[in-house]
Length: 487
Image (cartoon, rainbow, N blue to C red):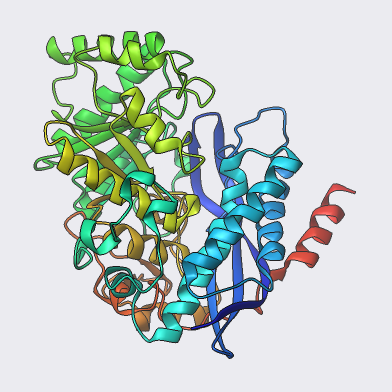
């Protein structure tokens, strides 16, 4: 089989959030949503694949010296570069093409002095469109191609200790039919309805407060953003616990997201022990007992420092810690595991094939070290349909990630910003995943705190229908609009 990337294009749509999403040093109120269309030749026959993602400020770089406009332009730049590096690439499998693209993009990123996490965001855009186009050409869904080793993945090229092994030997034989939606509680989210000022109350038919979201969706898993300020976090965790009690959540579980708020392990350890003391003293009496993990508490500049191994080893009662923003390169996870972390996150924006390799590495370690906890979480980038969320769910379920953060449906009003033709196609193709709201547009269907992915797994890579990009701005026109706005 001969594969060749023939051409591609990038289009963008500006999305406005229905409510502010505050995470770390950023507050998201609007951002572009990018679509990449790729034309792949398979033995000379053309197939089309599409990928998409939000371009969120202050996640890939978190550089306060950059303006938001500069940061968004940098994200568009790395996607455009990856598309240029991909044109004309040939190989006998998707993995062969991805491996060469990853190398080319990496060399370009080093020359441009860009951080690897940002550089690989561009690679992941092309990779996802490539995988969807290939799956279409084979007439099979992604999970089946993965299990049957038809993607050509060489795990030893990603992690040496996986030499001689294939994904089918380490991953579930079938994707999870349902996943648990782990609801994000942002730093500025209202906990109770009475917390919402009258002028900020929404009337779009979707829940706004945490309390209302629990009642509407039957939520059981929660991702709680923390700031590192013990007094503020204590007050907020207490209110969240009260909301879970008032809504009678059964068997709740939670993860904490530090969003790089701590500059040293000592600083985080003091914060954590203060929180533990409040729990022991019943001052956080209604907060859930089941902690899943703590995600990226340390700033990326300190998270993988060599001396951390001794500090973590000396902290016997530490919670399970995983990296997220620090998972910038292929070797980041092995390095983190050697230091004492429990694992990492998967989100498609960091790479699908990379995520597959990470899932395989963690499963290999579980089998070798049964007494140690190894975690692959499912995280989010404010994912929304009609492409990004569905592809992310398809991959996470194929990797066996049961609890997956979902927040795009909460901070954006379903698919109301997309053309009506797209809305109807989503409702037609995914009646198990989306529902029609009274206003007519589709919203994510979360029932009993879970998502039904039956239709997702029948599609090539989650989506299952052609996406028309004509309604959205081509990259060149979008650049012009940025320039016009700044003049």
